[in-house]
Length: 407
Length: 150
Image (cartoon, rainbow over all chains, first blue to last red; front, side):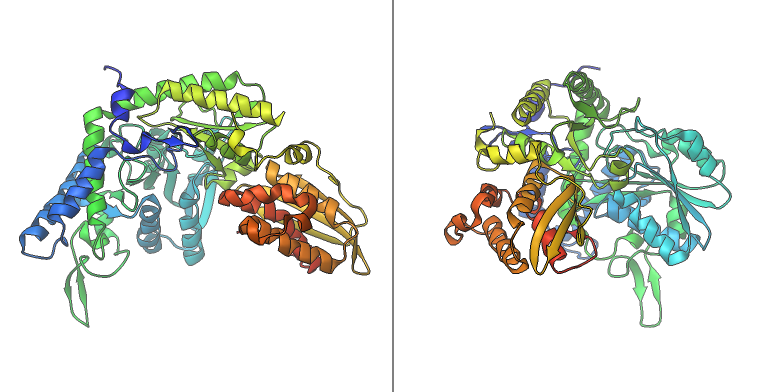
């Protein structure tokens, strides 16, 4: 496998070619959202300029073109995550909506008072709150498997929490706050041994590694387009066909029906049953273009590049006195979350921005993780395919300089 | 390297961040309110001793960024000796300073607090500076529940 050339890759991303506060932009907030290649932007522009109409409706040419592009994107997603059928690919607004869909459709029809949902202590709020809402509605109970000080799931504790009352396991494939990649295959095997279905929150993992839902043997997989070099407002829920077939619709409206009278409505087949209303057509096409882009690069090459960046950044960060890395799991994606003894993360964020570096400062929508590590917030640099070692150098130099200023 | 930030991070702010004034628990406080900025995790507990409508003493505990620490430190210094009404008026002036443009605001009336005027150029940081004052406002109104900037 040859290493990718990030200089060539960078030319695909028009937004990166700019100065911020008089310095070249160093964009390291990719775990929040990443930038879009011209291939995605152009595909969306072309769609609006030439082919746009509503899907699944008209007999006219533009509607047919739009439908073909929209369904073509579904097939690209299917291939990208190796689902068995495109019926298992439901387009939603993002990971959050995907998880809410499962909670409200699968959860409400399968969980009763006293049943349990099992998550981990490193989840993003969007893999906590939908389950809390479901618990309020059904009387089910949310159980949380603990993590250790490296930011790894304590798997034996997870196993102990799996019991005859567990109805669903929902875990992050990769943590947005810590970078931890969870042992999902072990998790899925343990849950399936008890006939418990597993949802993987793939918001962070899907952009950084090759995902094969059949090899994983997961029951649901949720991810967002905007973290995957595609547009915002589009995401994917993969669901095993027999589970999706049995689930009631999430929202009612157009496109999700086959026949409507005032007495009765017959729902549409999969996946349309879950896609009420006019979908985010052009965003979906943009997501398809992002899949093409990533397929051409190769997810394995992308992962190797990012891993090298992470190792390089981690090694440099460890040499900075007063810097503490939050999240040091053995299996880790390209996220470097850290705190400094002398400088609050919010000040780090503003200082780095003033020299053109975009990092995230805050709780990363994972307040329980911050509580666990007893920090109010962290600063987080997260890497993408277009980042370079030179940018890591600029970041580390910036951190060293700002420590001097605050000393 | 950080020249662009001189308006925001003035030396007075670094000084108060390194050595916050009135950073202590107040045993004889008769007002105590918690302030919280969920966005960045800043937390503070503000203590006041108010006698006959006059703020006799003010102190705080907590952790936050340099802007919020300096802001609450400066505030506890400046409100000592003010009547509750004067403190509320100062809050209003401070709020104006951090949210509107300079021509409308009389910076002289704000004294030392004027060092925080720079935050108005940084919308994401305005809450860091105003958390202390929202907490003070709640304490003066004798509200018991915690204050959140969200």
